Image (cartoon, rainbow, N blue to C red; front, side, top):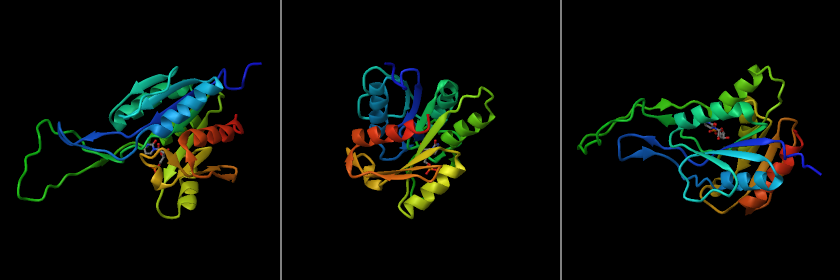
Length: 218
Ligand code: C5P
């Protein structure tokens, strides 16, 4: 029997991005990309075709998937728009840097006794851009979009608001202890008002539960 996933393509954004200030220094965050790899492994096990657009991650990707390596948010944005038209499911697990320098400096910033002032520009919201495309698509394909949220204040309420604002079907709320960790605690919310609270467990077990929830939207 062919599984539901065998004809499906899953696109995942994963890991941190880096925004270079000069040739040596960059802005980034503590994301390891482990959740993205766990999601990719689970999608592969279920039989889906998997593409991961990955920022720099210390961990190795699972076998049998396509990896599109990127460094900056703009590169991730470009790659996501390129690959999303073929995807049945798009999961935005990347921890994208919210800002960048308008243009990275060519030479190393020199130390001076004065304060250093940098003006940063906002990066595009990648999953929101994918969601806008979905709305304007005439192909009739109903793509399922999943995002992640990590908030220290009112996590469930702000995740719900984020799901709506970004036009997502589901959002996974992560505890900040998940960053760089092997285990995490999460809750999965969906646009129909459903909520599934997951225990503290491995990211692989969380990925399994996330795919059970995604199935309800296929
Ligand atoms: O707005 P916030 O960064 O909290 O939203 C988190 C969700 O949005 C994650 O799914 C993340 O991958 C996605 N995101 C994105 N592009 C950005 C910022 C966040 O796709 N520039």
